[in-house]
Image (cartoon, rainbow, N blue to C red; front, side, top):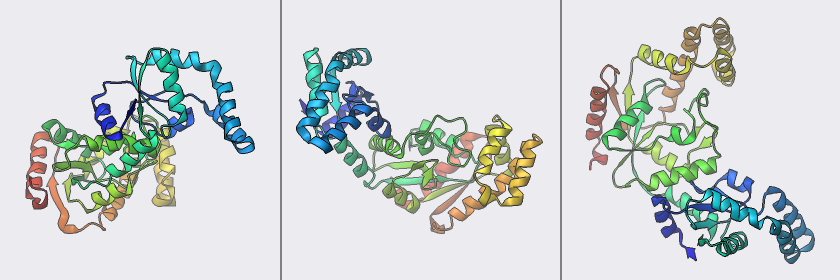
Length: 346
């Protein structure tokens, strides 16, 4: 039984059927449909062997060798499916909905499973992902210098019921050279796109969607071009927080990491800091003086952020004072500014 991408996305959002990716481990790690379980028909080594046979001897020889390699492992596929799937009804896909998914579907059907195949496989999902980034949206950007607390304010907006997507959470990275500290390992950009597209799909494009002011890349993950262009053209509510408040927030957030970890990340911005600043920053860490280190690094980030805003239209930037003394009061100031943006009014 095949299922079209539109029906598949609807089913996926309900999370009511297990999803099996039968591609190799390497293909799965490069990018997969969020929530999918990897039960490969051919592992990485099998694919390499069969690919060589295909080039030397043709398709029929490659298929014959494929069955020779995977035939003895049919029982393992069934066993893994029973262990990892909570239901005997599953959705399955390979790269383009061809031989691998059909063979695995036959194996599991013989074992009592009811199998739905995603029509045209992962390839059609990727096309859906890329199309999702092209849809026009009413984006509103929350900006502010490092340490302003943008992520915390986005969470307050989300708690209030606004549409919010935290790109840094999806990317497992806080966005700066130090952004990987304390975070899980980043996925590939392809997988970042796969997750982001589903999050966008859950939102109403006719209502305001809050995003944080980001560079084109968040760590190793790249924001899709179409979405990034919309972000750069969107109005910005720029939260203004006194430097000392930001300084203390950053010191709390990153002060828990070792001097060695901070030094390693500081070296990664050596060219942008400049030789003397780098030397002074590393010396401060060597003396366990994180305040002196932060003074140097924060000066750099403040200049970088100010420069990044130069290519925005100044008339689309709306300031909002934030003190962090009463977060709900701060939040209301942001909401009041949102109401002033006429082209986003509901």
